[in-house]
Image (cartoon, rainbow, N blue to C red; front, side, top):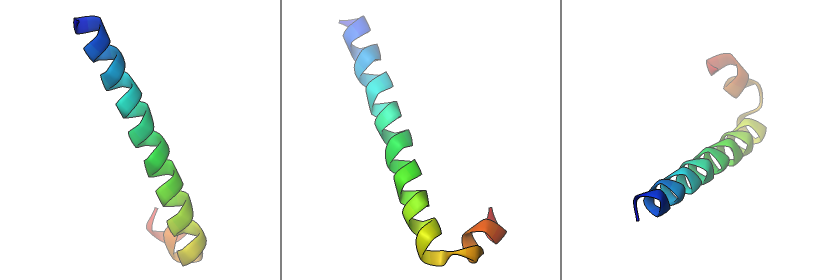
Length: 39
């Protein structure tokens, strides 16, 4: 049971990272140079 939990946790973490990346990419295209300056 513990290993299943760990696996699910790792998958959710990967999904979070993926979603974050997509969101930041989307925001980057919208704001353009502002995003690069703040980064």
